[in-house]
Image (tube, rainbow, N blue to C red; front, top):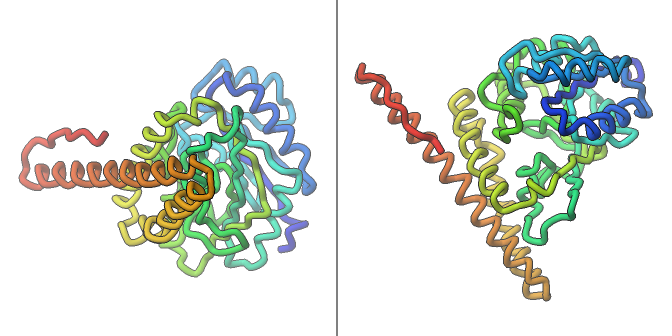
Length: 327
């Protein structure tokens, strides 16, 4: 099917009125696409007042409530249930899509075996990018990070702020798994990662494509440009990786992370040191942030896996399951 004949539904979720101005901007960028969007689905995540406001203000948008438990997974599932496009694209209520975003995503579907296409997510720093913040860790703020493909290439998993799937395949693989993703702003990741890995496990002849030309800009507030947020997000990422590997196995659940850890991050440390030698003293701080971020993430992953193993051991011995903290 030519990309010009495909129908497109765009799903985005929202959960707080604090993002209302950003949500309106996000919807405007979807309305203004060079390839018309056939349906905009806005999922309101357990906020009745916000749902009523969206229904009254956005008559051309299909507004639905999350009918599943609160969180990104349930919201995505509610959006998929309401979407009828042959291609279902996903973005966030605080992301601004380039005018040709949908057009570029559709151009990625060059073969029937390409069943998902994602793109670039650029951080839109409200108060400027912190000098210490390494590009290798832009995933901390939900964005494309250094080490991801810079040209069209197959990829293990797409990122929720800028991803799309063939609707029929998305429904065939099953729902986003609850209990992994974001809940009420708590930045636990992994629901889209788990779904993408599960898709490839069930249909190994299918391909997910990263297409950098499809671009959105993700709003990054000052509260997320702090060391405290960086540290907390890394710890949550380690936790979510452990949860994902519990479902899909470590071989697939950590396949991309191995290359990232042993190739991308060492290069980032060296780059920071070179920058410092050339007069950019913040390079040392970026190198230190990379080392610290890796340690925090790895430590959280290990603690979560050990906690799960100990709980399983107790259960195996038919003793009351102990509750081991994972954070």
